[in-house]
Length: 393
Image (cartoon, rainbow, N blue to C red; front, side, top):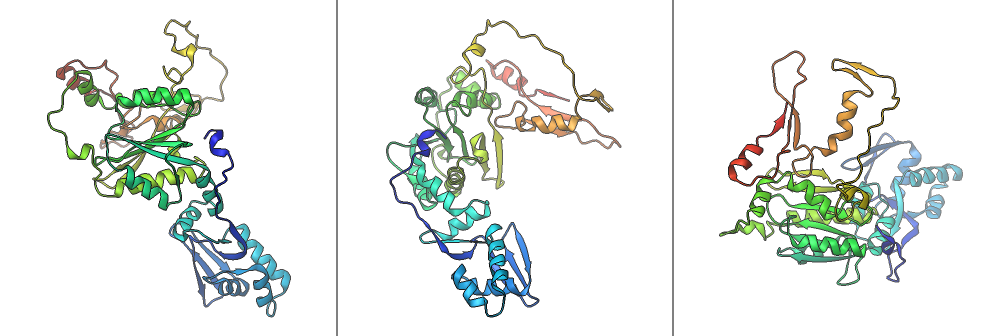
């Protein structure tokens, strides 16, 4: 984020009690009879062997204990240097952490599961002022409440980040809003809480990430029918209630968690350059890469925006040792190329909608199908139907 988010706030933040040690809130600690301690979480499990670790685990317990108290209590059985070394190892591996004097333990457990120290998460959350606005869609009060519960600093004015709720990422008012925020260097983020495929992100930070125009250019190529309806000025005679209303609370909670996670991590999550989609029909979450377009008319290079600029010749140069495959010589293996550009395959923001093998009963099946539509924008339903059948084999 920009410099505004890094300013020190006068607002008081929670401070950790550095003396009191507790097990990291994402772990449940078990003591086994065979002098073994198990630290168990849903995604990580660790076993600590030895009588000393069992004694430390029992002494720390659920209420925690300071290092001096642990040394004093256990020094009757173990050497002081051994106790100090055991405590040091537990702290270095973040199996035990300083207890927070005022913190939602459930939220702290989530940050710990992400490998994010709770004190750093809380500092980032406190230092980023978030404002929520809505354009023709419901859900703003619910999102505000959900973000507040996760520790996000929600404000009404002077934000460092603005969350804009819309019922469609193609909302035309977003073009003017984007121009304004690119000019003002103000970061913002889109959320579509309505419908059965709610969307969150990406972060739109001027000079750092893609802008709404970059996003629109990618999405319009994959939503040909919606683009056709807008170009033909189609008038809706009946609007689905799902278009402007939030179905249940799943979309709101999903958006709140993704936004809070991004803010707490200092915007080091996928939401910085991805849209996160939540399929309420199939209960799947997918990330869609959003590229910053160098030639974007809003945020791109002035030089690249000129259609009459002189062409740049292709320059051949030396490469690494060639790789011989069934397809001939390559400077890199084909799987490396596919892995490099895989992020550009998406039904929402991809240059190619999907890339998948063609099922065939062959001993060496190397046939793939790529779905895309590189045809000109359709002006009739027949042209639209013809263009939608595009693809490569």
